[in-house]
Amino acid sequence: MSAPLRLILFDVDGTLVDSQGSIVSAMTTAFNALSLQVPDRPAILSIVGLSLPQAMARLAPEQSVQTQLQLVEAYKAGYHDQRLSQGAAHSPLYPGALGMLQKLHAVPENLLGVATGKSQRGLEGLLEAHGLERFFITRQVADHHPSKPHPSMIDTARAETCVEAASTVMIGDTSFDMEMAAAAGVTGIGVSWGYHAASSLTQARHVIDTFEQLPPALEQIWT
Image 1: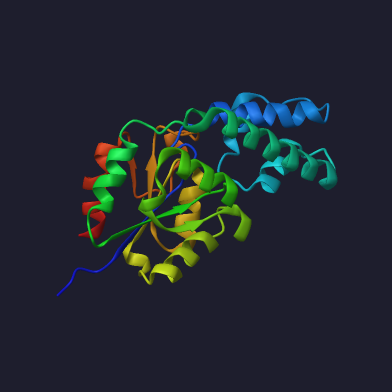
Image 2: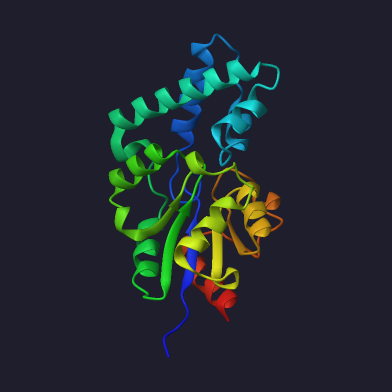
């Protein structure tokens, strides 16, 4: 009898890649373009994981919806220009990320996916820059879903792969990721190296400090 399929979903920014420099730079460009005060770095990193309209609403709550949407477009343009000019260096992989993806992908029962607040264009550009396209069978992006922590991304990934909730894991660095996992009825694994403090990942089943700790955490969940 074949083993049941398992769905392992990854957040991207702050989990697989360290994009904080690029995010802060593009956000600074966006606010400067509209002659608005730039939020400080901790504030900017606190919204990583949210879809851009929700992120701008938190960073510029005193601005009109129209201005917030202008910030979204200015951010997208700045981020895209940086990615084109810098390539893979724009958002470097965290140590151990590639090896772990290779290891997990080599197990036939494992299906890997992405659930990210990035746009489809942003995700495809990043995967291409790092040569990661072959790893992910399902890719859920902000273009097609409500912002995290709504469970839509996980629900859709499960529907696409026909994997039960009990056999699905969401791995991420923010409280939004763990709240999304809880809302979808799947297990959350937090990572401590991202943009939210590990102490905020209260809904995670496990919090890991290195990618090497991921296989034991997964094994404990599967059993």
